[in-house]
Amino acid sequence: MNPSFQNIFVAPGERKPLRYIGAMIGDRWSDGRLENENGVCFAEVQNGIPFFVQPEDDGWGTDERVDLLLTRHGVKRETLIPQNWEASLRNWGPSSKQYEWVQRIVKQGGRILEIACGPGGGFLPLILDLDPKAQLLANDIGGWILVEWKKFNDKKGLWANASFAQFDVNQCPLRSDCFDCVDSAGGFSNIEKNHSVWPRSTEYLSPEGDCLCQTLMRTLPPLNNCLTQNRRPG
Ligand SMILES: C[S@@+](CC[C@H](N)C(=O)[O-])C[C@H]1O[C@@H](n2cnc3c(N)ncnc32)[C@H](O)[C@@H]1O
Picture 1 (cartoon, rainbow, N blue to C red):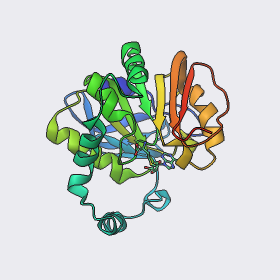
Picture 2: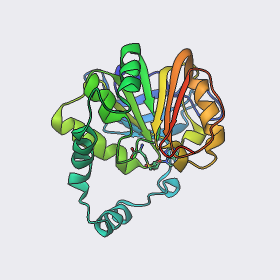
Picture 3: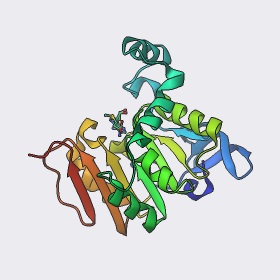
Picture 4: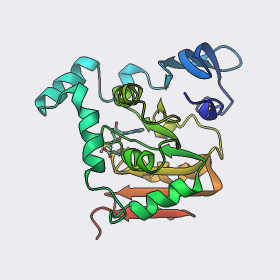
């Protein structure tokens, strides 16, 4: 976990800060836990990734179930993320639909939260292609997805500041005003109770921050500083 994200986590509900107890590699978290002032653990941290969701509440299920699912789709765990990353960048450039958006995020700088990045990564490959040093926190409820994205980055050494955190955005363990941009590409439409998640994104977004959302949903509640694009307009 990049140092710039190490002070953003709070206990969901209580909203009190969590502290990291565990091993460090340089200035980064390695293996440990996030606990409140009374020593109650809210997330195990493994290889720098905090896991806020209990395995039984991670809808993807066990590693064996994920592997079965991938096999059914003719996909290999080791090649899934590299392939998705390459596919995202294949036709990416100034003439791409999202180029202006992504450029705006990158120019703004600061901390970026990618909600429900999924195996496809959402905007993650695009943002990090324009700025490999972007301070981007990738989120998903599926722990295995973040493990695979981190493994990919560790192997390739592409992005110096990208970090990963597993939590349910409905119980978002983030302090207020800690992001300069919150974005999601196709994530919101897959989240239960998404109409309440979307406005709640402003809680952890700074007042000048941007919300960037590409979605299949036809209607989204209005938000300030919010750019939305329906993939299927109408
Ligand atoms: C269609 S996929 C992701 C789309 C993605 N942005 C992409 O480009 O592939 C939807 C993702 O939402 C995640 N998700 C569903 N409910 C969630 C929640 N409550 N909190 C965080 N992630 C969630 C799923 O695990 C899944 O990876």
